[in-house]
Amino acid sequence: MTKYTATLLLILLVIIPGTQISPQQARHDPVFDGDNAYDFLVDQCDFGPRPPGSENLSLCRSYIAGSLESLGWNTTLQNFTYLGVECFNIIGRWGNDSEPRLTLGAHYDTRPLADQDPFIGNRTLPVLGANDAASGVAVLLELARVLPEEIRVEVELVFFDAEDSGGISGWNWIVGSNYFVSQLSQDRIDSISAMILLDMVGDENLVLQREVSSTRSLQDTVWSVAAELGYDDIFIDVLGRSIIDDHRPFLDVGIASLDIIHHDPFPSSWHTTSDIPERCSPDSLEVVGQALEVFTVDHVRNLTALQPDLFQILISALRIIIVVGLPVVAVVVVVYYRFWKK
Ligand SMILES: [Zn+2]
Image 1: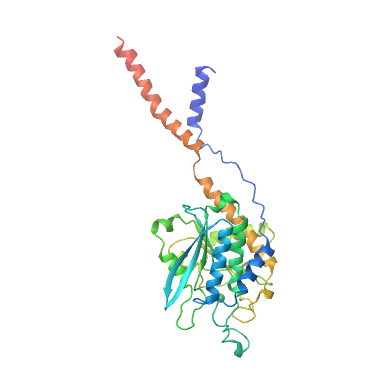
Image 2: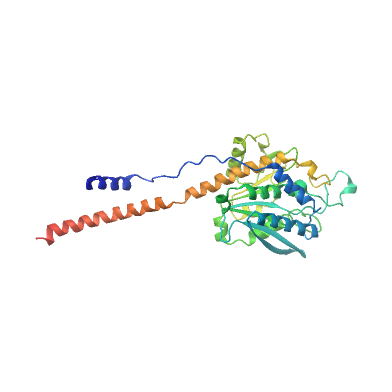
């Protein structure tokens, strides 16, 4: 290569703007398994009703944390007390010092009273909570198993306590997620690109309307992923209602958030003694799980693509050296020959 060719190549590197070399990734092929997820759902229900502060919920908490840890996730329990009851959010992360940018959540407590039961005599009984909300937890646990390892570092799994006792004995709704968000620093809030919540996603006749308070652009993305997978008969393009749920505290601090919830109307087993595994379906869990799996992989890859890689950093450094360095060398050469050498 002559020195002229080398110079020309260098100049081309400088003037070709924004050299993009990120390869186009093929769309991820989902492997989320509805039968596995259904096993996670049944396992939770085997502990019985799981209201905040109960022994059943404590056992279920150990089960969720143990399941995550057996899959290689690190778990921490976030402890808080509400109206004298000790509560715990469960947080799962991949690796010790990860700072994940996508938060996926579900509540794992169940409603203490079946106050929507059609039989008045049943309304003092607790809810078993197969759909509300063992279904959301089950999908997150199966996702913890199937997400590609390089994606997991950008994903935080949060299982909220104390979501579903609103209006009973002076309790509010969404207590655990409110506490979780109250503990986030502004830096941490700024680092979260999106939050997605799963609530009641396991009914045998699952229908997911668009929840109104959710961030529309995020919802559009998830709905279009679901449509591409052929699931637009479940992720229907119909506006539902605005729901007070665990995504709200995230929205309130400015994090793009989406509630994936069967809600307009709620499934017929909602807050009744009929919220049992037999009313849920592995197929429903698989539809939601696969859509969320593909969304998550795409979302994390897009985030990563936004970061300059080493090659682009080197090209940028070379540009600066040439743009600044060449004129300096030229001036020195001119000065040397025109004035100094005389
Ligand atoms: Zn509920």
